[in-house]
Image 1 (cartoon, rainbow, N blue to C red):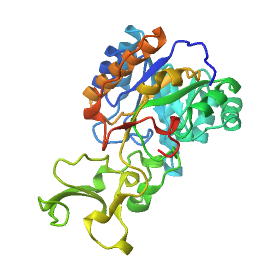
Image 2 (spheres, rainbow, N blue to C red):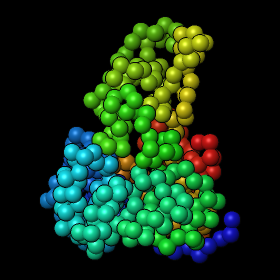
Image 3 (cartoon, rainbow, N blue to C red):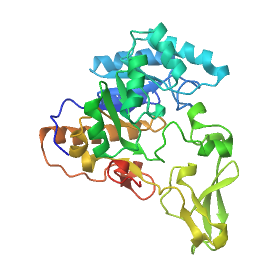
Length: 348
């Protein structure tokens, strides 16, 4: 991989509420992404997201500190929800954010026609990962930035960026799921509600955590069972690291091999979090414009610590300093630690 000149690299942090937005900006974020309450963005969870007044306050706070705010209107609305999404688009444009983050074609067209001065970023949910797909969105909807799916390697990103006329953003830390952004329907098979439409994987209404006797599990004889609408996703012995409770991180039994707990395995992928800090110089060499932290559903403490850690790492890399990467985010990592994901390990 040939080296490219490093430009200013933006750290884009998540905010599920106003306190998290302020924490991100104070910790060194260059931009923050957040959405309105309701089903118009893909983190539609109780207690999260912004009213118009809170969004206006957040934008004002960020700008006083020299940071940007991107408003997400990135759900895939069903026909009965399309009008609500249009109104959310109007509300977002009226606040004059630095950009809106959109995935649905109808909403992209709506912004292009009715709010042509509002900068558009293509959400990762659009799953655009090649030149022709990205050029389509740029030609028809004038997108200024694309967030790439977490399915590309460093080499693939490096080869793609010089052929594009838009900024490229990639994920740098957070949840690491099956690399099929915008096209995952595992939870919908169980709950009937897809993350692509209703914004929660899985929907917390259907999750249950129950301690049950299980003498085959380990010496304690009891494990914590995690079920999603009656489907067992996992069972944990005491002190065992837990995965985020999604179907893709489920540990299942092959019934043909018997019912013993020793028969359990992560069928799709092991629970790990994405962390690019150990490969940050190589990632910056691809020419990416922004590094995105996952986690609008996470706590204010997570946002502050993840942003600060990535800020230190980016500043060190851009100045050419060698820096160790301690596991100072271990408490926010799931399962058995962190991974560079498909950037290095395409099987991850």
